[in-house]
Length: 180
Image 1 (cartoon, rainbow, N blue to C red):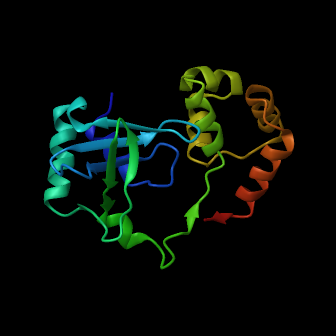
Image 2 (image 1 turned 30 degrees about the vertical axis):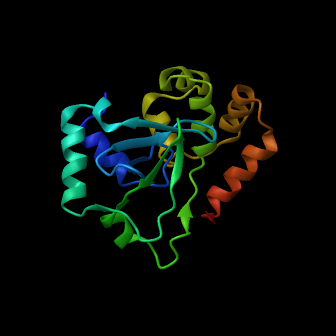
C-alpha cells in the first residue's frame, strides 16, 4: 500500500525505476492523476481518487502550495481513453538539477525492473531467482550493489537478454555513465 512516506520518496526521484508523477487532465484541471513506471514502455495512470485519502490530500496540497507546478512548455502525455495529461514538476527537484536538465543518472537495475513489471513478477519472486537477500535486492534496485559475473549470469538466465548487454550496462555503471 502506498503511504505518504513512500509517495514522497518516489516523487523526489524522477529518474529512478520506481518514479511517481502527479498529472492533471489537459481539458479539466480539477482531474488529477498519479503516474508510475508500468514496465517496458508502459506508464500506469490512475485517477487520484483511487488512492488513499491522505495521498490525495497531500498531492492537492503540494499543487496548491506551488511545490508541484506546471512548466510553461510542458507537453501533454496521452494516457489512453482519449485523455491527455500534463505532469507536474517538483520544485525541490528542479532546484537540485544541474544546468543541463537532460542529464540523469542511469540505474543499472532500470531495465531489469521494467522487465520485471512487464512480466508481472513480485519483488520476492525475482529476489529469489537472483539469489539475493532482501538487503542485497534493495541495494540492487538502488544501484548500490556490486555487479558481479554471477549476478550477470543470473540476469541472463532470468531475462533471456544477452550477457554482453548486461556487461555493457555494468561497464556504464562503473564508469559513472550519464545519459540523455
